[in-house]
Amino acid sequence: MIDMEQVCYSYQKNNPPILNNVTLHEHEPVIGAIWGRNGAGKTTLMSLLAGHNRPDRGTIQVMGQNPYNNLSAQSHLCYIQENHPLGKNWTIHDLLTMGSHFHAAWDQQLALRLIEAFELPSKQKISKFSKGMKTAAQIMLGLCSHASVTIMDEPTNGLDAEKRKWFYEALLETYEENPRLILISTHHIEEVQPLCESLIVVNQGSISIHQPMEQVRERGVLLTGLIRDVEEATQGAAVIESARLGTTSKVMIDDLYSKDWKAKAQQYGLSIEKASLQQYLVNVTRQQEGMKV
Ligand SMILES: Nc1ncnc2c1ncn2[C@@H]1O[C@H](COP(=O)(O)OP(=O)(O)OP(=O)(O)O)[C@@H](O)[C@H]1O
Image (tube, rainbow, N blue to C red):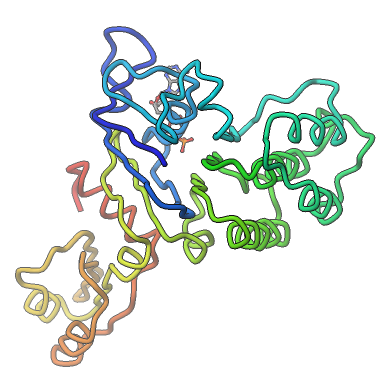
């Protein structure tokens, strides 16, 4: 469904590339999370996939076609930017008209349900909406497009907890009804991870992890205990974070949270817990950047 091969991109000529030899393939319908620290290159990656920019090197295909300047490829795509450009005087009614005009598989029923659930006023200009209401309108556009490849940049920004829950429910419902490729960039990985089958981590302009979510979410072992016991128990292990307080040490290991680690923790008298996915990804990307742990 998407193929990026050795893609390089910089915003200004002769500047170091923002994306560096990025290769990314997704050939099955899936909900995928795109995670990365600020400035990692997530939005740049998504805008290239959506055909908003042209790569300096490498190739991009969406549903078998180059998306850049290509109306035929665009008909398979819906890219919702963080502050999606909408007409200054547009109302929700105009958005519905635009959505059904541009997207052949537009889901009007879902659109009307979301408008009601998010309490979006039909006559008010969207430019006068609150941030959360604007976000809800964008979400409506992205989910109801039913585009084969739907890409949403930080779709929950500005939504309160209840509305984020509604978004996640609608996302799952519409995906189950019509499986397609839906990529969501997010900083709220803990919330989004139960919905996602795939995880793409962007780090310093490269893709450092692209794996099934179920494999990554099981990684990250936190051990706490006396410094000497922790050191002995973790000899040869991949320590990606370590902190000391007095005689106590706390470390994170880049490994599966497994029975073996639980047994080892018991043997050395250490306390053990599963690291959160967010903590784990922060440490893994830090280490990849060669920063001190
Ligand atoms: N229009 C632009 N012109 C020049 N540089 C840009 C432009 N947009 C982004 N950049 C630079 O490209 C790099 C990657 O930015 P990008 O927005 O892709 O990151 P991101 O991972 O989406 O970050 P965030 O999580 O903060 O939104 C940053 O160094 C940023 O300063």
